[in-house]
Length: 585
Image (cartoon, rainbow, N blue to C red; front, top):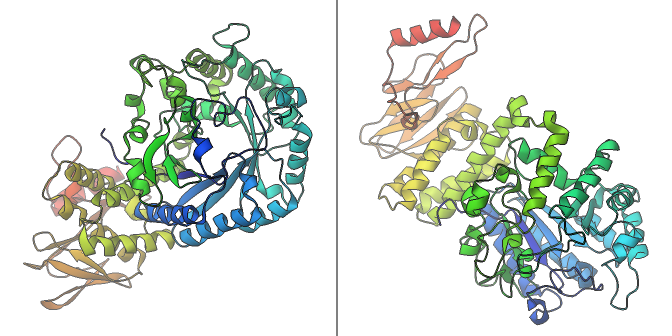
């Protein structure tokens, strides 16, 4: 399977494998995979430590600005405060200075108390609670093993979270849809609890075990959800509903906000209580062992899991869905539905979703209701487009260092450490991520690596030049060792200095210019403005007068030759003057 390795940004950490409820719609205990029976009840100290170390390693290698860790089960609160404290402490310690840690826990709420919430407040751990609506809806599935209702206890937990001192920890409510329940009553009961967010989840089902349809309607789930939508819309949309907002986003050409929709590659991995590394939990509904990878945190990195064929199959965008889905006009919104919901024994996951008709009806129903709202933020807000673009380039840099896997040698390692330090220090690298040809260099280098080209590592060696240029533009920062290409020092968007046979130079920011130091000649100072130094060719500018914006006219960057027509060579002074006149005109 081709395409860049997608780093994991979300880790589901199973801290306890048993539960204090007996929900008959639970995919862990009631569906095909029964591996929970062989797992230790609580996560071991060793598994906690190795998970933290592996996650820190992964975040550092891929320059991830943040990672989410969701504590899960079973029922995670059964792990107890002491074990949960250890989990939070080790994750916080391991990721300190590497990536921001977003800690969450998904619970049924039965054990929730101030003792837990005080602990969670200490680590900023946010709480999502499972609740299927009013008492009648919740009692349909979410009962104790002896049949008793759990509803009053869940409400008590939610009310505790709504107290002023804990309100900042309230993540939202998760509701599994059952079309036998009254949709308006369910929505009203959830909205009354003023959650920061509501997640409506389709019950896990496959073509082998299809979802219940009491009236036989092929769009029963869409009809139910659209009834909720209409109530929510009429109320003024008082609480975010992730499923609906995800449809809004994908219809507008944006990303999905849930794994259940959209074509975005999966970026989630599960760590079981014994340290086993697995794919997304919902696969347990398909067949025994469907989520297994054969890896564990004690012996394997997250990168090894990210390269697993089962994970890669959910990272191929449009190529990952069935032929029928590829020809469907709503595929970019539904994404073929949740991967698990496509399963059929005969041909595994090469099918439409068992909720196919529902997803199409839901998306078309929402589209009909909100038509005029479907304008992506990146179209109306240039800053949003710039941020999206820079994030993509930053992600590609992390992919490159992961695929180099140490082959870049000490020079790459030194440059990568500097990149991480600069990326944490503010906006120094904004020009790097926003440079028009940074991504060309990254994609060319990745293609060379994957094609086994002999110059691939040398191409990667351009990174220090970008970092040096960023520091010079910022007017501060450390000295950077930069390889020279054929005796020429090239600094993106600044210019190039001919140094003869020199293989490497040290670039040091120096006020409104920079020093270039080599082993075989005295240092050279290059001013950013005014007369240059011998051998220096600067990237020139046009505009900057009479109300015309000042723009760089870069006729030096080797990666500018990427537009389907040959790039012009270095322009003469008369040509630069002509560009300036044209721009002013």
